[in-house]
Length: 409
Ligand code: HAM
Image (cartoon, rainbow, N blue to C red; front, top):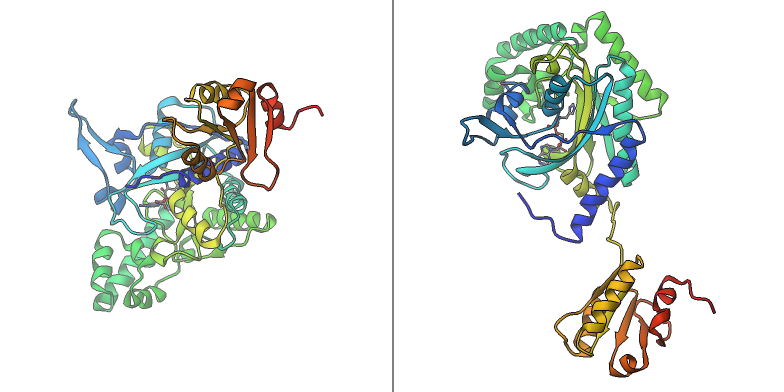
């Protein structure tokens, strides 16, 4: 868990703003849900996933409830849907922190930030396309170029179950040809062997029956429509039959956005897919759902690697330097701020030299200086700090007009 200090925090805030502008213009409204939920909400993500078995921050509260900090937000969205029963399609977005007890490293943290959308109550493959296209456009607006979209379909639940059994048979037959880690994964969740990074496992997996052989007609058509939709929008993608994703609730479409500049273990900038059974598992009516979540921490690392999205906080218009005791700075600063200008000042009645140093460091456009002579004459000195313009002494009453460029000459 990290502190994010200024000016880096400005990038975080702007990241959220760019996302909100994009998704609100596509008809999504914000869901604000609690950071803490009943543990049972998250165990529905899948008992066979690391997120649930190893990484949960869970504890018993003072009321004897077993609760957990959210490791992701899709389960919370489905819980909220089951509880409030809004009209469908329900298009929501969210942003905020999540918690997973993982081994921290570059791009992997125990508290990390996500932005995401979910659409509940629609089966249409073009909803899948809409959410993927939104994520794609978001990366584009950040300025990221080195992002690859990979897609896959896990088929209907029955297709997926038959595929998992066939895969289990294939992997078990391979025996010691699998790595030790691969054999352990196999007993818990055969699908996860598909994205093993171990060379031995990769060789075994290469000979496994392809998932597409198990698609029902409906699942195959749905996936074809998703691909056709992406093509119609000129969104480049690669079908990756080995893509399985780390959460267990997915059915049919799944996708991931991979950043080229990050280590392969942490290169997923975001991902998502369909989770058609999750609302039901949380006590709601059968409701299809699809969405994505994008990791802010990793995406900002990718932006830094690509040298894009370098947003800086708004520069100050003026910095007030008052060597008469500080009362003038107090009222001047208040007046200038009330006029909409970005203004800071020095405190503690320090020397002119010391205050000018702080003014320079502040990045302000102008220093507004008040000394004893100015105070007596009702004037201020305006000194440009970022340009070669000349220093002027002007009546205090014309300062706002001068700084906003609205003075009449
Ligand atoms: P996820 O793949 O677990 O999916 O997480 C989505 C993104 O969150 C990842 O691609 C990554 O960028 C970021 N992320 C995950 N864990 C960490 C971590 N420890 N440190 C930094 N970043 C991390 C989900 O969470 C699903 N809820 C996505 C979804 C929405 N599926 C359907 N709707």
